[in-house]
Every structure is written in C-alpha cells, then in structure tokens.
Image (cartoon, rainbow, N blue to C red; front, side):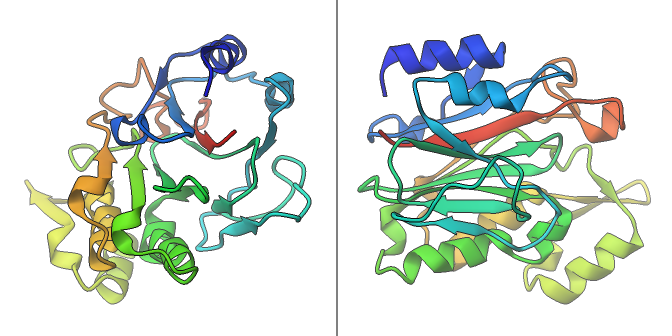
Length: 242
C-alpha cells in the first residue's frame, strides 16, 4: 500500500490510525482508527484513491457477509451483519466500534481479508470462530491466518450483569477463564473470549496482534459507549489489498 493512500485515509478520516505490527510485512493495509467526528459522512470514503468500501449494518449478530470475486459490492450499511470476508482487490471492508471488539483478518498469501465486530452478543455467538471456520474451509491451515484485535473496552471496565453472565455460562466452554470478580462485581474479558476462539481452532498465539488500549480508559482518544453513552461517535477498523 502506498504512502499516498495512507495520507488520503488520514486526511479523510481526520484522525490517527493504528497499524497492527503483524500485518506490516504483507501486501495489505489494515488499520484501526481513533475517534471519528460524530458528524463523519461515510460517503467520503468513496473518494479515497478509487477504492471501493463496504461496511455492514451491524446488528450484534453472528452473521458475516462474503464478497467473493465476481460478486457485486453492496452500498455501505445496506446489508445486515457483523463481519465481512472478501478476496476482491481494491476493496476495503470494515466495521464500526465504540467499546466492542474489532478484529481484522488476513491470510498470509494476502488472498483473503476480513473484518469482524464482536460485542458480547457476537462473542457469545462465536462470530469470530464462524468466520475463521469459513476461511479454514477454503483449505487454509491455521498457521496461515493472521489476526489483529483492535482497541476495545478491556476487562478493567466491562462490568456485566446476570443476562450476559448466563449467556456466557451456556455458550462458552472457557466461561470461567473470561470473567473476573472484583468487590462483588463481575467483569468480562471480551479480548480473551475472542482470542480463545482463535486459539481453539489452532491459530498460533504469535499470529495474533492485540491492542493494549482500553476505549473507556482512553475516552479522550476513543469513543466509548460505556463512558459517552448515546452522545458518541465511532471509530472504524478496516482492511484491504491492492
């Protein structure tokens, strides 16, 4: 990816970008943004170096959309889902977040890229595991897949109630390892819950990059639903190949 595209992205998004280290040596561009303005117009993305863009209309589900070569690219937010996989060139796919976990995916041969949005509902429904199984089903080995987990609300700030706790207990076999108890309150480690989904499928730990940033702790840098409430914007995670 050229420096020109990166400059255009920063200029249009008007915010800093974080580039996961494990993706820097392959021929794709993957990045996590910091705060976008609350008035950000996503049609601006179409002006960036003639790249096409697609982000799903997120509904906290386990649905991911596949845009394989030859299929048309829908308008941004025109299809419901919480993830996208594609093998098309000159197409950026992405997701919006404001505490939930953004996950970017790429095969080492740069043929397939993807973006996943995993809040607690998507995590419990194992959207990341399902997307990874789709890629593995195409003949890839676990060691051929790279993942990057972007800024999100960390376990230090993500207190949960009985509804979430019950769903975790039923759906996640590693339930006890992703919750913490502190002074009578229960906290969920969304990062670990998604990381374990990858490890359980054989993805090597060294293939997964994880941001250290907590969106609620760093609420001056990122939008956080827990901190800002409904009066918030979003940040985006996106990935594409030339």
